[in-house]
Image (cartoon, rainbow, N blue to C red; front, top):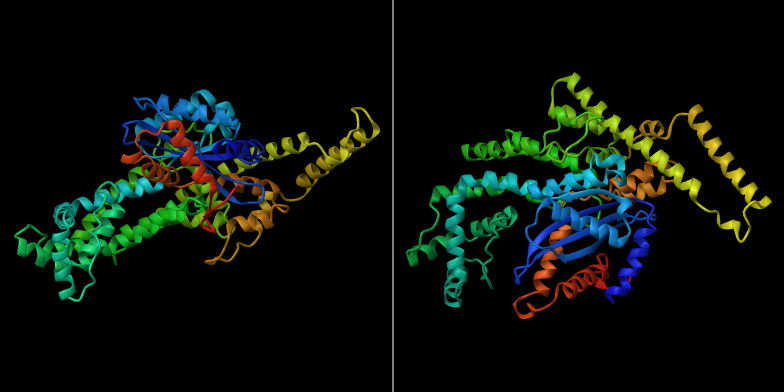
Length: 502
């Protein structure tokens, strides 16, 4: 089944007339083997967002940047899509940065604009780092709650006693206690929310058993922080979506984070001010749009530059509800210096124009090399072929002349009124309807809106891998594990929630 589906997907990817964005991550299995997952994200000709796991293979140690780059290039070569790579979304590990540098160094001729915006940093990972840094101020309370919950969940009799106290206090009993994964802030946040709900029960249980529990002051600090972090949980869900476009939501997400950290209404206590200050420091490190070294379009972007990827700014520009107006609004929110705002907007628009020219050439080349279906079995040099060729050349000449005489497609898009925002607005459906009117921008939209904001799609493959390669199935070979993980992903239809043949 895996081999049959793989052939079908190979044909689909090789015939794809748009670019492919990749996400990748590493995982160590119960066999102590290092696995690397690579997921392809793309938007097809029907403007449907697609996500396919195209590799789930074991990678020999050490996992250096060179080893990661070699595995990615090998995967692209195997699928026959080396010339289609657009962006690569990875977490912030230094070996990933080195891998992107290696890709640009040796394969820039196969990348769009020589890989100027190849490396996209995982937003979910950055959000995790921001909040983890902030939550250090209540690490004492978190540690006490975690150890108390582990103690209760370690035996049936302890859980039974906990439930007896809970029922006596009018709270529902629990079948089990959920303890967090310390490296994932939102799982810690969920653990704290549930602990605060059962606060009186936990305190009573700890007193009976003479176990250390959070003090009244620590509970209050935890409660204040949980309310504050609810907004960040919602933002994490936005950037972690992996079966629909997210790239055009990047700038609004950054503004929401900055607003939450600076808004005086949130900072009602010293603990929240301390939390916001710690998170703001990390935010400035990872997402500093005013970094001069990486601003100009003619500057060779290096992966080690921290400023956010301008490809994501262009994705926001390609949202017909936002366009240039949102770029101006975004930079106005970041700076009160009008001259600096104008400069940043112009830099962003210069990148748009640079990509537009590149896509204009790509679309013209693609049209010139396409073979008309009406040609049939005519031979080279026949009158029919000559007529078709001349008609095509005339159409291209007419198009170029109209571009010179009339305003360009890009200017027409900017001058057209922005779409009204709404909860049910579908950005891909809009571009599908307007593809004939804006053919070059629609081609750009298919590539830029395919950029995933996080590596969640690749991380999800490891969750599947853990279920398949458990303690009772630890002898599965890497080839069989890849077949099972990939086939499961390829069969899944998210809207219906069922497994069917592609």
